Image (cartoon, rainbow, N blue to C red; front, side, top):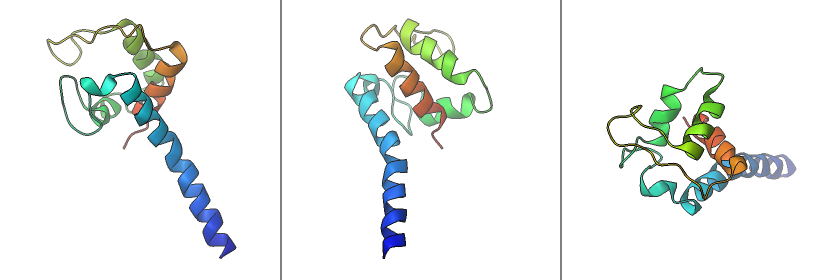
Length: 101
């Protein structure tokens, strides 16, 4: 019983950061243009994760794109800068995105 509770607790803790960062994406209005697993205005977060897979600088690149905006990477629609997102939150979002499977 104790091992089961420990395993369950570890599972909850492992899932908590993913849920928290999706909640952060919702709170910062990122989900108006993105979704986890489908294209909306911008690419899905899973597509972004695949694009940057294996790129050691992915978190840094995505953090900059979140903060300053981007254009031409995913088509003609530009991503605006997100002044309401702090650098720490942008980094947290970037880490969450690149770790999506």
